[in-house]
Image (cartoon, rainbow, N blue to C red; front, side):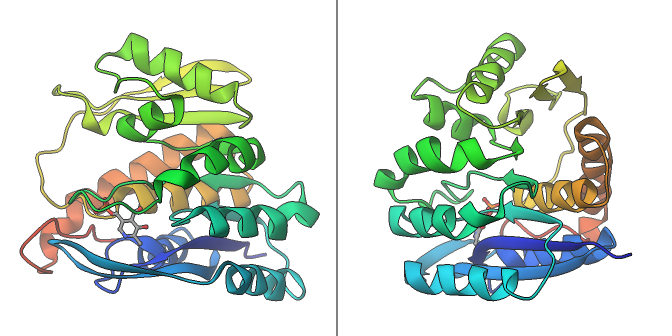
Length: 260
Ligand code: PLP
């Protein structure tokens, strides 16, 4: 039976990030994809020019419409834009405990645009983190959630992953892509302890939407029944292939998308 996976995230009309990336990743990983929109953005491979958040009640209406009719095997949460939308997502998901949730705490686009209002960080930490099965911050996001400096070494990454896990998610995967190193290791803190996933840095500027793609692939694998460790290994391998194939695309002149 094909699994159903829901993305709650923002739109990237250029197709590289947000729900567009999520739906491509869901198809590629063999699950049926659904998408609740939290915000429209105007953007291309060069950056985000503006953001138009969806009214919180309408975000809740979309989530309720899906759950009223469709079995949901896993949820991925990406850009939630502001505090009102974060609250609406928490309330709308509250009656549906037990469904795995992958939470990608999207805050700042690669070009520097804020994708989360400053006053929403506390709500994200206090109300959304405890719902997550797996939290997937990059280094700046992990630091922002902990109000700490950005990790520059493995020791700090490991400590921050464990500190974030104490805030409520079952597991935390901190992505090391922003490390100033030839390596780009990720660390998973789960009830089974710490685990490192090694990767060498791929020299490419086609990294637009890599976080969205990874978290969606993770949700797909978890929906299919993978353990957290299996899901991380498979999703990372899938993302590496998508980054490696990005050169076959010809999309824009900035940070291009990956090829799913
Ligand atoms: N736009 C939307 C709607 C997103 O959800 C995200 C990231 O998660 C981005 C843009 C940022 O993409 P990137 O930083 O990979 O360019």
